[in-house]
Length: 243
View 1 (cartoon, one colour):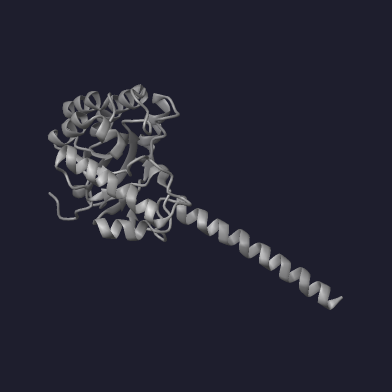
View 2 (cartoon, one colour):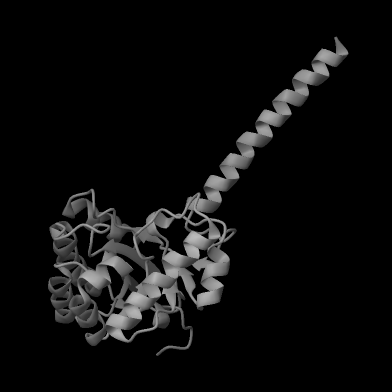
């Protein structure tokens, strides 16, 4: 009986360890603030009334319209671009850079990096770097993982390419929610040093419908400015000495 009890306890312990291990891995892969698999930031310095606007998945055919909205409010932003979209729309990528915005790396094909090999991950980041540099002359300094999913090998890939990881403090969910919900979500998360994640594309879709994002930005920016916020690119919001 003692042996059976011991075996039962051992089985339960093994099962618990498996569950805990899976839970820890899921935490490392998806929780923005976790840095186990790769270093990243989720917010900037909190000494200024500043917010970083970031946009993923572009460029798209609607990116120029977004640039016009940002320009009307004097709002700089950081665009995490996919290499495949840059090759498809190099003029739009150049327009982002020419407008003074920052460009980051969002992999080449918007691949889910989880379960991929380190070589695959490295290749995705390299291809995006090359596409962005070729189209714009910009050497990206920041990287955001598609779907916010990190994996083994990403730390080394970021290090070898001189990329700093960026996640977010608030994600807009602008690809699946309507404008009022997106605006409310971002207003609720507004704080010194916040990093907002929105999207000027929809993965690699051609002519994506980003009307929700455009309307949300038009409504959001003046309301944030009324609260005393201004907007900074990633490089600036991470700098504690910026005036």
